[in-house]
Image (cartoon, rainbow, N blue to C red):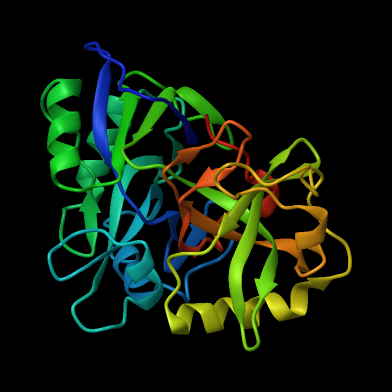
Length: 308
């Protein structure tokens, strides 16, 4: 079940609010002695996060499916999505924030109200690291917004207390509000340098068409640049994958891609998804002041659309 994006939090007694954790959405699945972790697109990530899987194996139930977010915390206890790729480094810890319980000992809980599922969740997750419960936040939407912004966290998710769990769809019973402009975008090409690349070309899908959203020049460390460059080499393509290129002209901010510029770009198959931060969307539909955050191997490219 996925949340619908909004500009502000809904208000009312039928809503509750949680931190929007900046990590990998995942489900922990236990069946007897068998344990698995699955990403949002059902990729098996058990071996990628063995400590989380081992902790899930100790859940006091014969079988369970727990929904949550795998989060890397830095030395100050702040979530860092980039750190999630380097969590073995000193000073980082890995936790699983559980926020829903879908099945328990053979019982399907998805049609039960959220408040009831949360109560059952607290009975099987005792809050000992690395398995933590993502508890509802106290206060009004305005108070919560102020507090979460001051903590520098990504955002808040509002959930209707009596909502059922609808797998595989985006629901308006869950509303997410991000306090920074960020979204996933598909990599479709890059401007090369002598040894690597200067910038990425990224976009999103409108139906079957991949629409270019502009260039990403910032946010790359030397190691990350090398990693991305190597990942793009097997994906080399002869044709531009973007339906809206070339642009007729460059915009005021320089995000457009002209026919002349396209001659110097190397295209890749749209298989890699990047999370990108940016200041705003320009009037011509391009990103302004875009910066690379991380690769998202938990998001299929075809699911990437422009978020409203």
